[in-house]
Image 1 (spheres, rainbow, N blue to C red):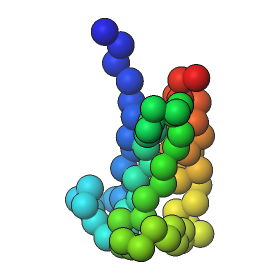
Image 2: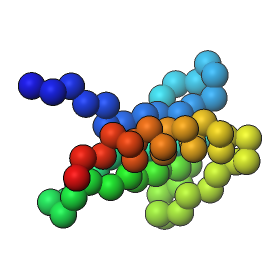
Image 3: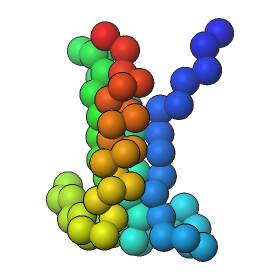
Length: 71
């Protein structure tokens, strides 16, 4: 068995993981190969709105998940 990290949740310090100000960066696969998905917790319309102050943490999470994708 292999242990894999496939999701990172980013929220403001002290906030719960379901916080509306949060983001989720995850690896997904729909049988055609892995890819990275970014979700904005405050929006259900498929739109991602990124606060510029949040970008460094989101970028680190994206880079980590892209590096963790398996071909």
